[in-house]
Image 1 (cartoon, rainbow, N blue to C red):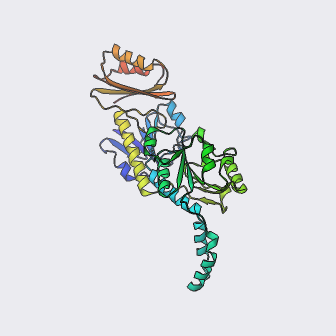
Image 2: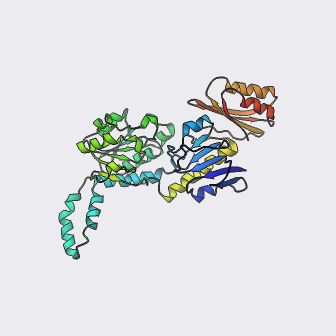
Image 3: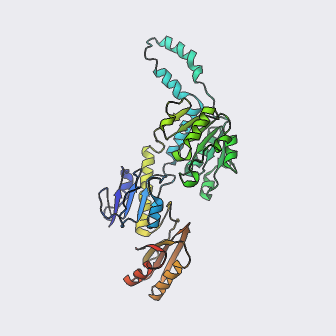
Amino acid sequence: MFKVRTYNQISPLGLNRFAPEQYQVSPDVTDPDAFILRSHKLHGEAIPNSVLAVARAGAGVNNIPVADYSAKGVVVFNTPGANANAVKELIAAALLLSSRDIFGGMNYVQSLTDMTDAGEMSRLLEKEKKRFAGSELLGKTLGVVGLGAIGSMVANMALELGMNVAGYDPALSVEAAWRLSSRVEKMDSLQSLLAKSDYVTLHVPAIEATKHLINADTVKFFKPGAKLLNFAREEIVEPTALVAALDAGQLAGYTADFPTPDLLGRKNVLLMPHIGASTAEAEENCAMMAADQLMDFLQNGNIKNSVNFPATAMARSGGYRITFSNENVPKVLGNVLGILSESNNNVIDLVNKSRDNLAYNIIDVEDAPSPDTLERIAAVEGVIRLRVL
């Protein structure tokens, strides 16, 4: 029986996918095979040696020490795209809120509590409504930075609103390209996108390469009066540069899902309490996707949507399955196959994939490998983690 330790409140639709006769799922299990969590921070926490995988029911994994887990052979999964529609819909709201002073107008109406005459209120509002005027989105240009699961949906949505859309993503995948409308203008650089966009929305992960992507140098390229939306990660925007650009009028507005004290009280800033994926549907989708990926890995050794190991999958061919992770260096797979050959264990099928400095292998063999064979494989230089399924 596999043991899965839960953190946070995981949707029952996800947890119910674990068959009770095969899985023990609880926040209190000892010696767990895997974790499933949402926003719980694992940095600084000791991880049991029994843990093989961690599944994050969401896209971001900055709450998980991925590099440390990689060194231990722990596979880290996320759920890209499961909450994409929820974020896309909030971006639609953010575009509308930032194009017109809807928020300010609504607050003004709620402040008129001393008025009792409806006619008088109507006349006052007719006079004051020009204070909250804005502009339409139709014909404006939206720059989308990052064209993955969320970014491509946002780009297509903006086209339906009548906007022109420019996109920039140096790592655009074939899968994402298929999802993207041909009407999205592909830009060669971030600078060229910023220079032509009336609105810019960020949809890149929080990794070292994107930390402070919007900074004192890049803000200079914004079209004067442009508005910036950040529903990706707080770390992508450098705070000092943002405030300076808002003060100077280089940016006319900032709408984000990541409030910070230095941005409170500014009329040109709209802040939300990190609610991008906070819909019942998104939480359910993320939980179900995380559970399915975790089960496929634990039962079959297949990897899909890992942030640290290569996507690797192979249909079961009968016999016994060996999986192992290793440092991405020469001769490791050859040495393992040599040991299997010496032990007269015939290989039915195999797949080997690599990603950066890690590799992962699935090998189906006819007969159960002996303890001595497994011990020899585990001792091969470069092998990190070995399993038999």
